[in-house]
Length: 215
Length: 370
Ligand code: HEM
Ligand code: FES
Image 1 (cartoon, each protein chain N blue to C red):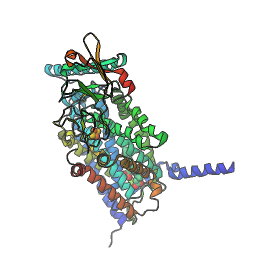
Image 2 (cartoon, rainbow over the protein chains, first blue to last red; image 1 turned 120 degrees about the vertical axis):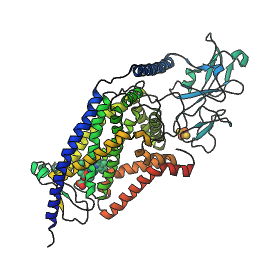
Image 3 (cartoon, rainbow over the protein chains, first blue to last red; image 1 turned 135 degrees about the vertical axis):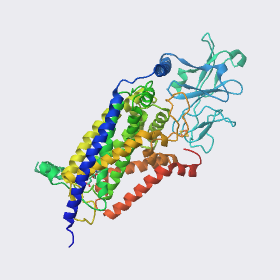
Image 4 (cartoon, each protein chain N blue to C red; image 1 turned 30 degrees about the vertical axis):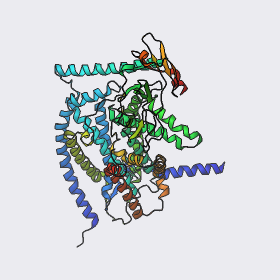
């Protein structure tokens, strides 16, 4: 006698139905044990040791301070005609100093062999990652996203890099402690002012608002 | 006038066929719904499984909201607080992370299997297009959620993603060229990724997207119930089983097993353990992009092509995929099921290969990471 397929399915369904009932009952029991324990613990007041509490608070304060610092820089950008990058003496030929420019883009500053600053955008012209600040022995910096290399002397990408356009230079100024502008350089490299390095030491490097408005 | 009336009548009739509300009664929805039994029957569970993972996301997401703080200074620390100090916080966050991946996986499998079974065919166009919207919303959930912990990898990956959108403008003609830039600014909310971006992603992730999904999912499920399940095969076995109570119980069994598995995974396997990065540092605006930033695995299917092929080519490919996705009921109207199955296999093969071996292929072609 061939079994009627419909009846076959019916019997199968009944078996599944009973099994499922048992399964769901057991599962609900386990769930109520396991899950509820987890749920209640989650919402209770967390008991922390004194050390933990201190650690959490100090970390929180540190991050709030960092945010406050960033906000201050933003404010400075709005109401000052120049923003501080770093003191001239702290610039290095092999490790750039990052800062955020007037257009809120990352940029960095190095110093050239003759001691004058090199200031260029750090926003990769490929897809906009922030380029690394370590100069290799060929005088290039590396964007880690897709391995574009840029010469810091010319800003140009090394042939074969995914980036095709150079990193643009920024105009800058060297300003002494009394707020006197000693030397400026526009984004095209034209300098104006005192070009005697000895007379500049002890001053600081700034980027100027007027140059980013030109750009 | 009569012409217009006829047009309106035709439109209403066509809507009535797609959304047969006259079947909205106990008899049709509960008593009479049947699920066909055949070789591909397992695929009828995938939609339900997606729903299950979505529900897990809603519940665990609400839990996380009790401690998460959506500000650039506190977001990272609050997530750290959840995982380190809140009782079972690690478990809840891990569950949210694992279930999100499971949801997207089921979502993709559900779309591919319903495609192969030709479940999009007339009169199920509304089910399909609401489903396609849910697929996009699912990806948007992943994209927005990824940013919320505000760590180096996520913020930088988001930055690159937004810049890719921005850059696509240069391949568009005329007035359209400005649209991607405008769009990027709209998403970013400022000249660079920052608090405004975080707030927007937060609003999207916890309020707007869930509401949208709930609404569209309601339509999706209503239409599914009204039409009943599609045959799904060219050679019906003639067998079927009652949706209520049998199929729904089996659905619940599958949910139970899924919950059991994900419960165990989330208790002992940190989601991050599959990522190539050590513990994520908080985002630092003043620093190089860390090496090897990557999106979540379910974006690899566009990420690796973006890395390997010309940008415009990938843009054309993505646009074409989107168009085909929404026009599927029209384009594949006369395609046979075996042919659809072949296409579904090809799509699956592409997704599996690019997701699992993308970085390997990248290394072969370009040398080195990512
Ligand atoms: C949040 C996302 C989604 C949820 C929760 C969901 C849920 C469901 C459920 C519970 C069913 C009935 C059972 C089944 O056939 O599996 C269903 C059916 C269906 N879904 Fe989805 N779905 C989602 C996304 C999608 C997507 C992305 C597509 C395709 C683009 C899609 C297309 C369909 C189709 C065509 C059916 C009818 C299947 C048939 O009649 O055989 N859904 N969905
Ligand atoms: S973003 Fe710098 S190389 Fe691609």
